Length: 92
Image (tube, rainbow, N blue to C red; front, side, top):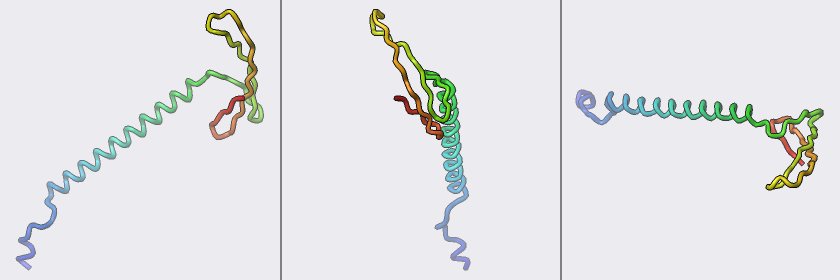
């Protein structure tokens, strides 16, 4: 029994503390990345107003003026938008 207690084959306290520190730092970095991604997604969602349509029953329409590069010609284009209800918009 005394021989078994004197053997040094187990983990030391320092090794256990280091491994706990590394794991906790990894979780902190992961949490920071998740929070940053959520913040960026919220900003992008609030800024995307390129085609603002009023959707009734998932369908909306909009007329857009399109000009060529030198602004000499102009054309009206009708766009129909479809909302899936799950946050996805489709345009035709």
